[in-house]
Structures are given as C-alpha cells and as structure tokens.
Image (cartoon, rainbow, N blue to C red; front, side):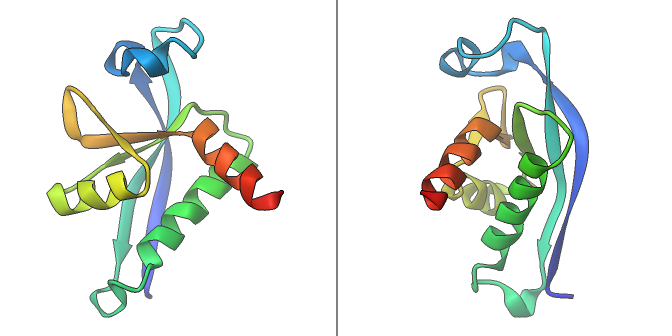
Amino acid sequence: MAGYYTLAASSVRADDLPPEILKRLPRYPVLPTVLVGRLAVDRGFRGKGLGSVLLADAALRVLKGDVKAFALIVDAKDENAAAFCRHQGFRPFTSRPTTLFLPLGTIKKGVDAEVI
C-alpha cells in the first residue's frame, strides 16, 4: 500500500475560528467538520506528491458526499506534518497550532476554477 487516509465526522467550536472566517458563517456555537483522522504515505513513496493527491481525494469525497460540513480538519502529528498541511492551504487554529482547517468553500472554489 502506498498511502491511505481516514475520514470521520467531527465538529469545532465557532469561537475557535479566526474572526474573518467566523463572520461569513451561520451563528451556531458548534460547526460540523470532517476530520482527516489519518494521512500516511509509505516511506518508499514520500516526496512524490502522493500526500497531496490523497488530501485532494479526501476533499473531493467530502464535497461529493452527503455529509455537509464547514471544513476539513487535520491534527498534524508534528511540525513537519503541520507545514505540509499549511502548504496545502490549511490554516492553524490559534489555540491549537498543530490542528489545522481548510474551509470546504475554499476547496470548492479551487475545483470550480479547474473545471472552467
């Protein structure tokens, strides 16, 4: 196996989000998200872009699925993993720098731009 990921329903407290994001969202105290619980690439396949492909596949599955969520969430295991996620467009929560989020609206805009 070259790599894998898992997805799970999750949620975040609205007050954990930056104000510029929060102002565009419904006024709910907790917002639904999808957690990328695991994202792993076999050592023999690292550095070939597979992690980015797996993350993109996870995002597309969520966008095409029946689960409605505000964002993808990742709990990076270390600073290298967090840097990878930031490179992919994820933003850290201010209170938890190795927990990052990427709004699905941002992903959808990127997908729509690719289709056009």
